[in-house]
Length: 68
Image (tube, rainbow, N blue to C red; front, side, top):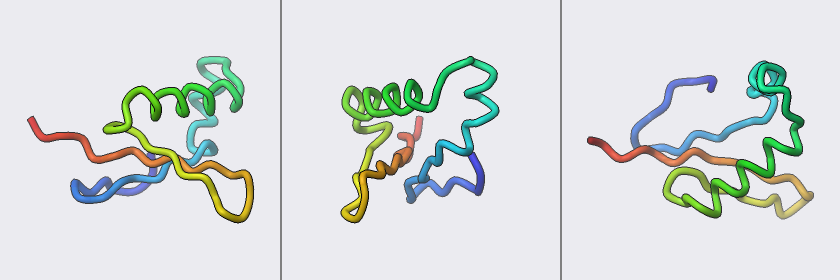
């Protein structure tokens, strides 16, 4: 992902950042969105989603990882 990751901040994930990975694994954006939504539902301590109040856009945020 672009930008430095700060321990005390979440990082917003953009599907456009995953274009090269999407091509490598041969998956559609719809598949990637479905997997991210499932990850957020299964492991909310790792990823959270937020829906826009103005459109049907969904935003993805990687939560900070616990320290060892």
